[in-house]
Image (cartoon, rainbow, N blue to C red):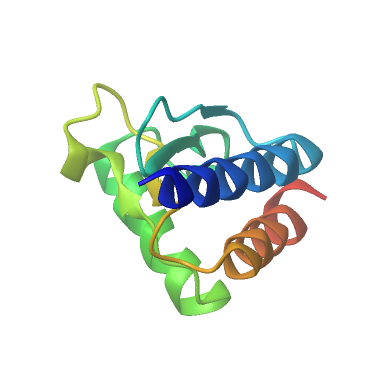
Length: 105
């Protein structure tokens, strides 16, 4: 519906803004409910095992859960799928701020 599309667009724009502020690379969603973010620069090892370790660290230490790229058939490690439709906007913004504080500042 039109209302759903508007809310999805607002969530996406809020996420893009905070990703830009945190300097986290991403691929914009095109009529989709997911954004792909590139966290390859913070992998301990450039492999899908390294990606899995980062996913565990994000969850255990920061309480952030994203789908690893390997599960989405990403061609290289470090990309994560973020659902922008099922999570409240403020929760997404907080997740990226936690990641930025822990790894990029």
